[in-house]
Length: 400
Length: 226
Image 1 (tube, each protein chain N blue to C red):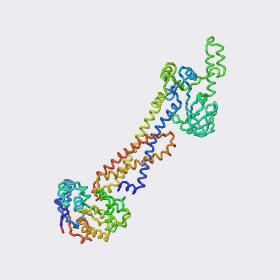
Image 2: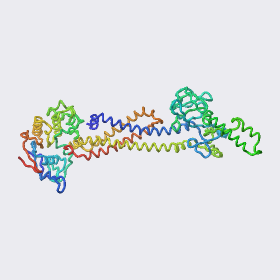
Image 3: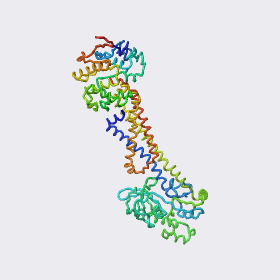
Image 4: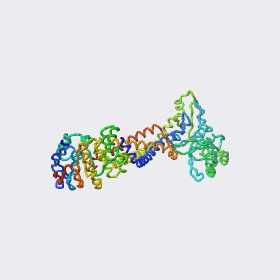
C-alpha cells in the first residue's frame, strides 16, 4: 500500500495546484537557461554564418562585436589583392530604430555581399535588385511587401527569414552592401551644405598665396567632387584563405599591416562571448541561481506544510508501530512527485510560452537533464524539513 | 489465568520544583489475559498518563512494565518499542483517528502491512474483522463517509488486526450516544473473550459499567480497586 499515492489521490486538487505553482517557477528557471543559450546562439550566429577564416578590423580594436571598428571602403580591395586570399568581403552592420506604423522597431542592418540565398528564408525570395530590397527576420514583424523608409530611400521587404537575430536580440534585416553603407552614412542635406559652407569660409580666411585657384574651384563644386564629409567606412573585412595556404601565415602578414588588426573567426567568437555575452551570462546565471533558491525555499515550505497537515496521521502511524522508513518514504515520494511533475509541466508549458518571450529561448537537452537532476536534488533537500518534523513527531500527539 | 500485563511502581512527574505535579505515584497494576478492566477517575487523576506509559507511548520516570512475560520497561525501555507496540498492543481513542485518505478496509489492513503481512492475507483478515463489527459492506468507504459509531468500529477492528495481547482504550464512547456507547463497550467485552485480548478502558462513562470484569479508580496518581 503506497501511502504517499493514497494521500495524493485524496487531496488531488491541492496537490496539482501546488505542483502547478512550482512548475511555473521551474518554467522561468528553464527559460532563463534557454535565454542564455539563445544569447550565445544569436551572438555567434553572424560569425558562424559569415564563414570567414579571418576578420580584419580597425587597428588595435577587437572588432565590431566588441567596439566601434571603422575601415576605409577600399580596404576590401587592398586585402583581396594579397597573396593567399581567396576572397575579401566588406562587413557592414549597424542598428537603427524607427517609428513605423505606430510602433518602435529596432533592426540590425546587415550588408550582404550576395543575394542572401543562404539565409533561412521562410517566405518570399532572395535579393534580386542591387538596391532598395530587403530581407527581414520574422521577429521584425514586417510582412512581405512592406515598404519602409531608411535614410533617403524606401526599401521593400521581399523575403522573411527565421531565427536571425543580432547579439542584442534585435531582428536582423539584410540589404546589399552598398545599401547598408547608404543607410549607415545617411546625412541630412543641410549637414552637407553647412559643412561645405564652413570649408569655403575657412578657405576664404586663408592668406593670399597659400592656396591655388584650382583648389578654390574644387571646393566650391558639388559634394560628389570633393568629399564634403569623410568617405564611406566599413566595420570589417571578412577574409577567406585560399586552399593550401597557411591561415597562421596570412594572419601574421595581415597583422604586419600598420592600419589594421586581424583575428581568426574563433578569436572573434571568443571576443564576443568573453565581452558582450559574458556579463549577460553572469547576470542570467545569478538570476537563475536566485530562482533555484526561491524554488527550493518554496518547495521546502510547501512540503513542510504538507507534513504539518499530516502530523496527526504521522503520530498515528508511529503509534501503530510504523518504521521511520514508512514516513520518510511517504514524504520523499510526494516531494519527488511534485518536483518531477512540476518539471514535466514546466517543459510542456514552455513550448507555448517561450515563443512569446522577447528573447530567443533555446532549450538544450543537456541543460534540461542538468536542471532535472537539480530539481530531483532540490526535492530531496526540500523534503528534509518535512522528514525532520515527522521524525520529531511524538506518537502521543494522537491523544491531543 | 495468565498475566498479560504487570506494571509496578510507575512514577511520573510533570514540571519541576514547586510547580511539579505527580501524575503517577508508585502505581502498580496488572491485567489478566482476556480481562476487561475499566479505569475510572476525575480529570487530572493521571488516567491518560498511565495509559501512555502502559502503551509505551511516553515513558514513566521510573518503574517496571512487563507485557506477556517480556520486561519492556525497567527504568528505561528494554526493547524496540515501536516493533513491540506493532505486534502486541492495540489502541482505541475517543476519536477514531483513522487515516482520512484510506478506506475502512485499508485502515484495518494498515497495521498488518506495516508488519510486512502480504496484501492478500491482510485483506482477508481485515475483511473478517470488518464483518465481525458489521462493517463489511462499508469496506470501501473513506472515514469522512462513515458515522462516528462506524468509525469507532473500524478503529476497534484496526486495533485488533495484529492479534494484540493488550488493547488500550481512552474514552472510546465519549463522542457517541448512549446506545452506540454501550454497543462499543460490549464490543470491547467480546473482543476480550473472543480474541483472548486484555482490555483496559479509561472512561468517564459509567452507563455501561456492568460490562467490565473489574473496575479500578484513579485519583491523585494512585489506583484504588473498587
